[in-house]
Image (cartoon, rainbow, N blue to C red):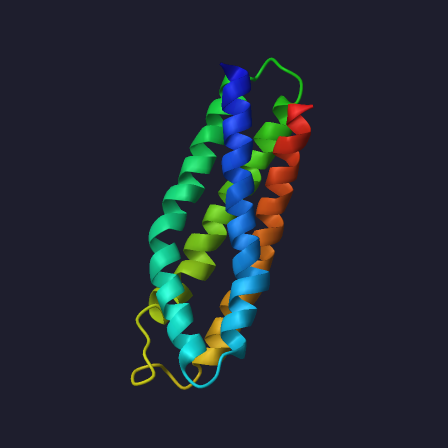
Length: 148
C-alpha cells in the first residue's frame, strides 16, 4: 500500500510540476508574443481556468505527501519526504501571499478595464512564479530520491 501511495504522490506532484513549468516557460511566453490584446485576454482566461484547478492540486499534493511522510516514517527516505512537504507548504504560502492576489486581479481584466501597469503586474507574477516552480521542482526531486 505504501508503494502505491509513493508512486501516485510522485506522479501527481510531477504532473503538477510539468504544468507549472509549461506555464512559466511555454504558455506565458507564447501569450506575451501575441499581438494586441490577445495575450492579456489569454492570461486572464488562463488565470480563471488554472486558478480554479491549481489550489486543489497543490493542497491535494500536500495531503498525499503528508500521508506518505506519516505512513513511511520508519522507512529510508522519510526525511526527504518531510523536506519535500515543507517545500510544498512554502509553495502554497507563496501562492497565497504573492501570486493569488495578482492572479485574482488579472483574471478579471479586459482591454477596457485593465490598469495602466497591467504588464508590470504580470511580469511581477511571472517572477514569483519562476521561484515557485523552482521550489516545487526541488520538492519533486526529493520525492523521486525518496523512492530509491
